[in-house]
Length: 357
Ligand code: DOR
Ligand code: ZN
Ligand code: ZN
Image 1 (cartoon, helix red, strand yellow):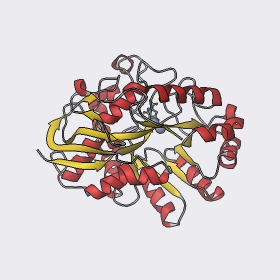
Image 2 (cartoon, rainbow, N blue to C red):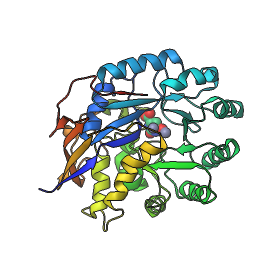
Image 3 (cartoon, rainbow, N blue to C red):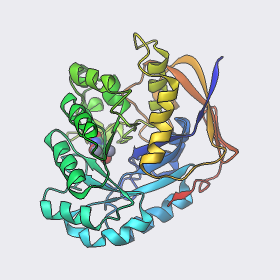
């Protein structure tokens, strides 16, 4: 048994479903899943029901997070044309602002220039703006970063054209960063056909050439690995109108360690362990300006194992990676000196996670 020690990981893209979707995930189940995946800090997305676009909804989600969470949690505020006037009031209680430019789960969307201008003018300069932007929307985001001379973070970049455009922007010195998900690195359109609704998410799985492009940029243009943990129940996924999204908190580290290790699914190592730590800990912390978690680390067993649905803590209870052989099972998680997770079991009380900010 080879045990390695890593810093507590940070996931800057998690869907926790509070309020309105607690049957899919809540702060207790989602933060338990995070610990199971070696993640000690998660940033929750605002496309809840109702969304986190008003101070009242954001405040009540924060109260629930403080009461229920097993790891540290920050929440995004959501941008919407109806509620732009709330942006200054939302900012002190949010880690960043999320703008949805393209179609995805839930109604949160910004499709007009006045709202985009209001976001870039009224969201505090020292807090990040993150975007769900696909295809030419990435160019819109880069244009806004240049126009207002402020950082923009691109969520779940999945296509060659997108990662190459971001590489061009970075080369010109523009303040843009991006994340890539393990599902876009390890699955493609052929898997989407095999998996049916369980392989449906936004952005859609890419072509083999899109996937190759993401790996080509893993040691340069890509700043973070983020899970985009987007749980939906199996009943919902098998319904007539399946919602897009897949779970990711409990499989991301193992998949990425498998790429470090170079086996069994990867013909050769794609990145170093130091680079994995940058992508899953140091860069997320720096880009989102997140607090340090002292004495926080994880112990991971590098023996190969098979991902299984019945070992998940997420309420959704399934993953598109079930049956896959990977390396790296989280054995223990230490948060601020305390062992909070050990071999599948949560060892701490609800509410022991801290709220950020
Ligand atoms: O597949 C997705 N599901 N993509 C998103 O952008 C949102 C997410 C969700 O909330 O389910
Ligand atoms: Zn998204
Ligand atoms: Zn998402």
